[in-house]
Image (cartoon, rainbow, N blue to C red; front, side):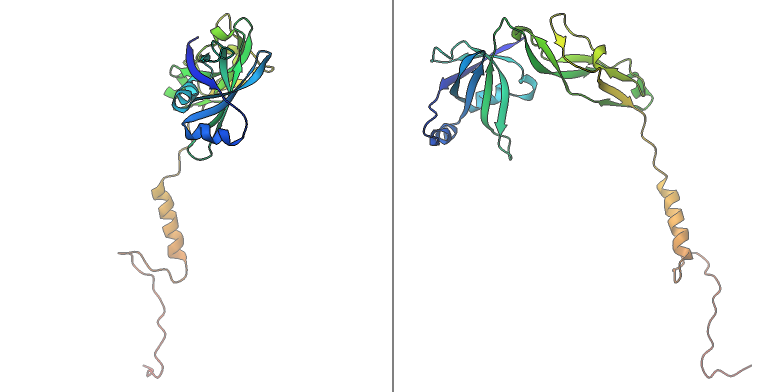
Length: 231
């Protein structure tokens, strides 16, 4: 498990306006809690934090660096991130302190590898889950769980029980739920030309329809002019 570092500092929680000041300075307010310790308010650099909570690295183990002795050296994982509705900028972060000697449960991304056999027959690979909950020691958290989809044919389904885990990683699930399948080829649409031909026939049969170019118009009765002499 890769461990990354994150610089932080303690911050005051009163008055409330200090939070806005922290954000104006390009930092992000947050808290550290867990492992039976007291919750501590912190501030971290915005750009550095963004790199640490990237979707591909959200479950990395983070080692805090701080001038405050009660924070320096703590190991944490990102527990929650609050973002702005527009732009997705980080507004607040919750960091959970972990004990390196105690297992914990985390959600790990699934990484689908290989080319499913059913794709050759026109099938479509359809992931049903994107992550799975596992239990392991903090230093043994995997970056991802690889799922080899090579043997899957059309209509085949792979369940969580069929996945391969390291000996020190235990999957957590109550039911053997499906994680990926191969859907059958999509139904071909009716030819557009044929559809257009049918529409043309319907249009020609409608009252007052104008004949297509080059078509021979059907015979029509022409009313006699008023006052015309009888032959």
